[in-house]
Image 1 (cartoon, rainbow over the protein chains, first blue to last red):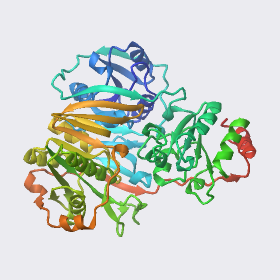
Image 2: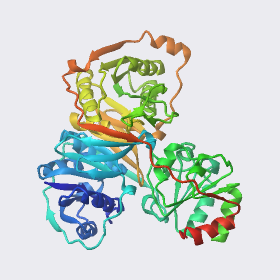
Image 3: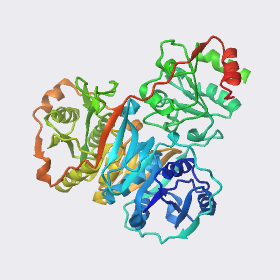
Image 4: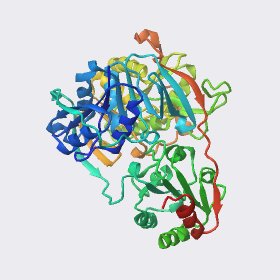
Length: 310
Length: 249
């Protein structure tokens, strides 16, 4: 039996999340195949076959994969499911959308947000917004797992030379849903989940305009900009900025939390960062308990000063 | 149009849940329980569709012991018309929840199923997708906007890169994200009225679903604590530490 990893891409490049899922898959000790559903996307296929540790790339090419719909991806997984006893995806919104659909069709109880693979049946995953870590064991012959990518290193993106197999694309003409449009956030900043440095703002930013102060510092550091759920709930920034249990998990080399109190649900998404800096005017804020360096002070003074000194 | 809303009873989101003494599970004794926040958003959205004249009936369903009546009554007080309690004393994992919901779906024949994207207890984020798979219905997960137009529903989804809009023929399954709406509170008169609304109970066995523990919990622990660091007095000190001590900039 083999392990199937559902690759993620943007129609141009392979997602860094997929590299982490491949690295996690290595712990299962099986041959690893990458499922790439794309609109004949050569650059993604090239990248997929170069990933170290990948045996085979399953090339599902069709125009309908220009924009991914869960029903189509699940149908691809089903069409090859007999060869596999592990089905892996990242715990991105794409993996969360697609994998449970395939798992249910295979009568598999999926295990979500895995942070550690102990053996092929035993896994660790956060529960209760990261308040607790559960060690769970599967009694199933086949398993479906989403991987919390920040808990695993990335597989080397070079060094592999996998064969690319052209697959016949399952017919899903009868599906009852279709893509209408995308409104993707355009930013010249690095992507949040793969950035080396992340600077996030919370409710203390007071409004969306003030995020310009964070952007200015981010510009100097080539950092990604994130936000707490409180800042998203208050409408300061879009939801795709959100770091935390209900948003994205990040683990950069440097995480700077500005005006963020440090609710458990936020900590769950960033406390694996290598170095954490907190800037907050409330010295009792729980964020200081996890920060390597804390600065108690007014963020509206600290941020411009920080920018000028970088 | 009829809307089915599956809901879940979980810990109140303000409560920090801890492992029990034997580290075999979480300790939920004396923990305040409530409707899962994402399910509240689902109920609210259904009520808004009814208020807009687009839905006629809202049915809520949950699975669990008698205590789950509390959350069903809350949903009825908020504006749901009818409630169903599928009774079991065992914990039910997402795949089996989906299987139970299929049975309820078959007997209720709703046009739209709206449910929370994730329970804040197990953090699975699976049930809606699994239910959609087992019924063969289209799925639109992580909704921040729902527009019902005739026999179609258009859903704006929160995805990692921004927003995506899908259109689905009804019946369809939609799971809710945080920004879909801000749930209302139940008024006292409505809480009183809810006590007289119909709440049907049925045993899980009567639906023919065999509950399995396909994944068992071996251990529950607190996450490793991070050491508290140092406070710096000035921005200069901070920059110095980041450059020369942590060497991250």
